[in-house]
Image 1 (cartoon, rainbow, N blue to C red):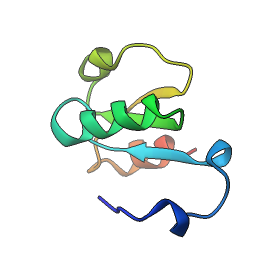
Image 2: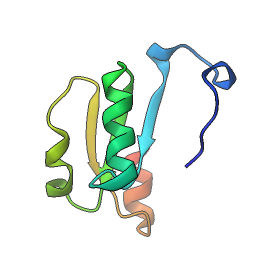
Image 3: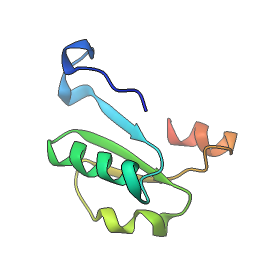
Length: 79
């Protein structure tokens, strides 16, 4: 994961969208929950939609199926 200080990020918080992989559990899930809680937009990805159900529903949360080894799915996730 790429981590940098907020002052190093360009654009306003309103424009920023996080794409976080592996959000079905562990660090990915924890990061996705924390980022949404502070009001930022998150595209949360996992290999299956069932793996994302624990994140719940939030206006700034966009669940997406993504197997990072599948090039087509990777392209679809960033569209």
